[in-house]
Length: 432
Ligand SMILES: *Cc1c(COP(=O)(O)O)cnc(C)c1O
Image 1 (tube, rainbow, N blue to C red):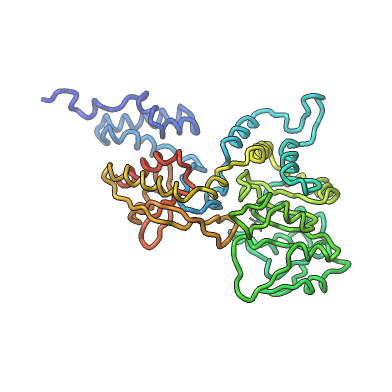
Image 2: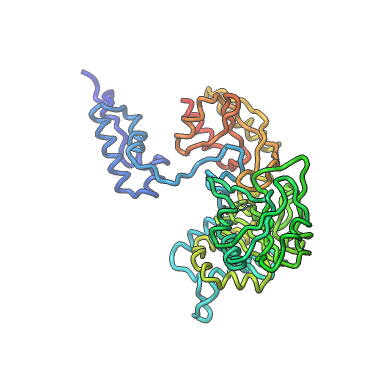
């Protein structure tokens, strides 16, 4: 006959204690208290019946809850803009702006006059201020939408002259030529895969030309016997030049010398520049259109523009990103390798103290997601046995690394320093 406290069923954790578990507390935020309490109640019952141990109650309750999707993950892949991981993470300023805009907002109202105002004027003004070379700016849903709007408004029933070397697939099977042709525009392909000259364009340009399109090869590199024509030369052809720069860099970045930016592209003579908001700009998914004032106004008034309109949350996040440009994307791109190494070493030491053997190894991070192909960023990673990849991916929070030659590399370049303790805990749980 034992003392009652030895009976595991007596030590079933209380509901209050369980609700203080950070993972269950987070679930309350997304799924609601009632659902989480019901799952906790069931797990407590199972523990009282001896089907699980008291220690297993939090995990059992968690397992009974539907995983909210999409879930927040730790990006330890070393890919700064990972399309499968939602590209750019929003800055704290952008997150705060999204929260503030979630309710009723003055997105389309001037509070001083009480009258309707230009929708999203704060974001548009901030974009115009960031790129003074643009006569006007407009924002749509994403980079693809920006191109579709330009093609529809300027080249439906006309030709888009484009180099064969720039007919790219963006990803997930979507191809720019198909996208452009879906608007009714005809593609007039010029040059070859590796070489296109100004003369190729000149011979194709004529009365049927809607515009010449210059697409930045943002996810591949062609090397060897190559030549392409820059915007400055295309601007001499006497027809509008639309430049899809992809990455959304507004001004040159010394780290990414080959990456075109909106200001330089407009100064080189582009009539219109299109770009994404959630790549190097580090903002929300959006399509940016910058350029000639009359042309941007034509796009803005086109009926299709209404179908490509961005919501108030995007406008709020974009405005905050432009006002406070030190985004997590910029921080990841410009992180000091020495600092990354020091963080990796302290993580290794902390893990070692808990009996988990990790190594610190140099790593090559990349920009990814449609920007600066071929550019490698010196980085540092924790190296663990490859078998930990799956438990880490299935943990809470899920941690995504990169498996290289049987080792799991957790690259710290895209992990905010503040998340190091979370990473350490996640590794210990996966290993334990
Ligand atoms: C990323 C990219 C696109 C597509 O932009 P989305 O915002 O993903 O729609 C188009 N063109 C180029 C050159 C790109 O890099």
